[in-house]
Amino acid sequence: KQEVTQIPAALSVPEGENLVLNCSFTDSAIYNLQWFRQDPGKGLTSLLLIQSSQREQTSGRLNASLDKSSGRSTLYIAASQPGDSATYLCAARTLGRLYFGRGTQLTVWP
Amino acid sequence: DADVTQTPRNRITKTGKRIMLECSQTKGHDRMYWYRQDPGLGLRLIYYSFDVKDINKGEISDGYSVSRQAQAKFSLSLESAIPNQTALYFCATSDQPSTPDTQYFGPGTRLTVL
Image (cartoon, rainbow over all chains, first blue to last red; front, top):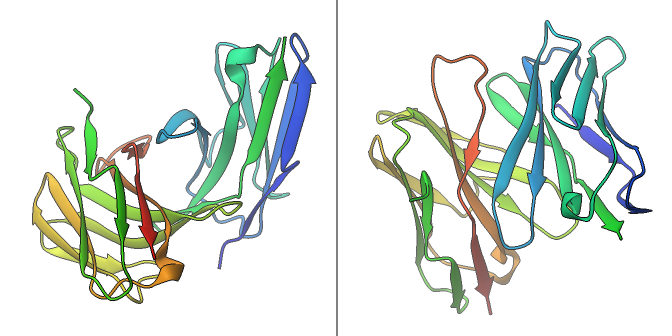
């Protein structure tokens, strides 16, 4: 069974810092790896999806990388802003299903 | 209007009651999913459906049942609710076949079982 772990569980930083959120998975036979954002009281919003054949994806200040062989993905947030405060979840798609990590709760203070 | 809607958004019920959570989507997707999220835990898959005639159990299907009434509607039922089913429930959809197969989530239903 696929297991997904996210480190750290929580992170609090001042505005402007560059951040790295980590995600690891136990089964490297993944179809893709997704990063989501979850705001309190709201559903999940997909941020980036990396296919198994890709190494990275970028969207604005966000960059996600994937290393299947080592079972790792990282989400890089450049020049963090208070509006980036949320919980970030990664999910590995294996055998048609998404397996989620527990998330990293990010707080960016002014 | 939201592409994936869930009703109700909040529900408080008592142990032993039958509860139905509903999900509707206007994205035209074939695949629909039900997840639950508990504090400090990731989302766990309850049931999923790849089309109207296809229903599959997820990781934690015990105590739950589903109905795919149409392509756009997927309902989750708790036949006899118990307190440890208190959680945040999410419905999601994805297209098939599709690249990149992104899942789109509803806003969630917060269920409390007393």
